[in-house]
Length: 602
Image (cartoon, rainbow, N blue to C red; front, side, top):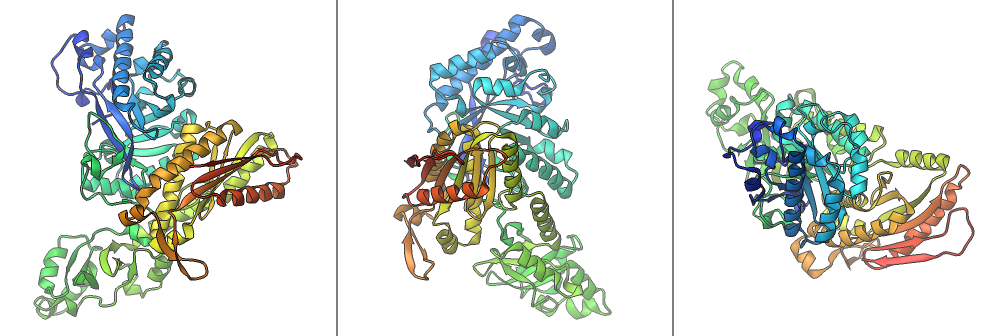
């Protein structure tokens, strides 16, 4: 599936008999292709697909020279848009539609008026619509202001590309789209290996984070590709390996929509534990013979390994190069081939639980003896084998974290850290801007972390950062800023007129969406048990988010200590409210006056 309507590339156009324009306009068959969240499997965005009228007619370029034909393309697109809205309008407010337009329609002078009229007639908010454009069509529309179009229409903007024409990061910075979709097959052809792919995606992800753009990948049709792109850290994913297309969208989980039955909860989550780096690896039983193991490993790379199990628990490791060393020794084949592999396997391999922090694993791995320095690391979960981690992948992950830290970003969420937050506030002081500071804090997060483990805690933080990004995209302007102070503390700067809409959207979304981060029995009971700070087992409600809003008129002589005190006060008041809540202090910093508080509870 390609989301693009009106593609120039003929090989992507399905074989169809020629038909007249009126016949093509009556053609039905609009399909919705779900984009799933790679952390939770939840579906909240859909790509609309229907062939464009210009694809069905011969002599495309000559046909387009006629102004009437351009009008026909616009009307065709708007008709499809209206049909899609009829099927989409019944969804809750969190549902969003990604609608790809023909470039002729997007550049038509009547387009904004047409679209506004349809949205009004269908009673659908423009905030729920994301207009898409293909990377190759950017050149066609280079003289058109996408930013002006998006703001005028009130919609979001999506760019879809595959790296074939080397989408410039300057394009991304200038257009500031809300969503960037990578075409999987084109990317795999363009990337010359895992390292090259990781570098390309790393640069793209960094650019997207800086402009508050969500990144996703489409046409993921094989399980192995799903695992591949999960490992590269995309936020959204679409394809047959995720969930099938449908004629009527609905808000649900991947498994509920007929998607892959082995879809793991939180797939590819890159938390602080080493477990997310584990690959399935090769396994055998410790009772197998060296000859049997040799037949398996001789077809593998010299650096591959095999994990030896006993009742699903790892008891040994044999690297291919260690096997070769044993068998190439004098009388090696005669001595070992018919014997149990337990004779030559490493009976004390490095084994770590999936939740062990990366830095701790890296230090232990690098402290091993020279002959074992590059041996794989075995990962367990609940004492059972989960997978293997190579030293190379471990060092690559540590290097990425160091790069994130060096550029002032939080390694877990990728959001700007304290250094960037301070620089942003300094810019506000210099430019004397008026902004609202929103401080977000999670309630009962420590208890959740203690109860469900560090990896679950990391998932909660990553998902929180994603919800914040979504709410900023929906409710705030393009000059909004999101920062991760550390732990479960986040800050958002936005225009005062947008602050309350953001707070309401985020608290409602947090209440609704985070239920998937708990086991079913916890969701049914409405509480979980964990130790308090005093060491006493008690019941806790689900994690909630508290938002404190402080309006600030920044100026060069602004007292930061007063701002910190005000933020601490309002945050404390917000946390005293039950559930997901927000509180606003309308007092201006450095201005006298009594507090005026607005309260809201989701």
